[in-house]
Image (tube, rainbow, N blue to C red):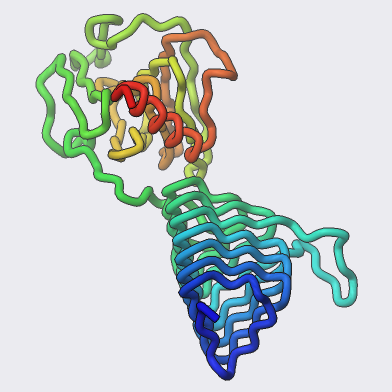
Length: 318
């Protein structure tokens, strides 16, 4: 046997990966699949219709019920509760259980509760004690009951965006750590009759738009965006209130707080964009270089990363 099972554990499955360690009082049913180099601590229970990837850590007191898929490199903290039946009744069993998936690299904090039929995104972070009622996007940090997005992992906040921070000379364009993404400050003309901010397309804004849209009346807890484009360029301005914008090129991730109409951020094609933390009065104006085309959207973060990798290989000639 090329994996370890503690003498006081009950492992009925033969589908256990090399190097995995199963500790005392853990019970694994026959149909369960456990990957390589996993660590299942004391008092873990694993039902039959459960798949666990490689290098997964499952701390004490966790139950993995039918209908759960856990991908590689996931951390599940002590006493995390997974559920698989949203309307349970004693001795009444559904035809099939809702499918829940925890994507690679995600971490779930101690005592969190995960409702059935949702997905925890790649590298997401679930805060201790959170009650997760909806799917969590890749890289999101969620906390609370019900859990809400409070940030994104490995994201730096650009120092020029908050109103109280350094004021840029105008008009100006600042490079960021995210490939192709630039922060723009426009001419601002204050006047007792009303202030004015102005920018010119193809000069201050680096393309001529074919479309615009306005986002408003967004509940403050909601997140929008969560996609990239194959060819479309976008430019975002908070004409009222404040919005946090996350830009991600697959290697670097940066956050910008747009809180004045004289500030905007440019997102080139193949940039993963997220907007969240809308203030109650926020109005976000977005200019787009292309007419609407559903085929231009990349809505899955894993697909986005694969496309970035493929394009990099083509550009390198390998």
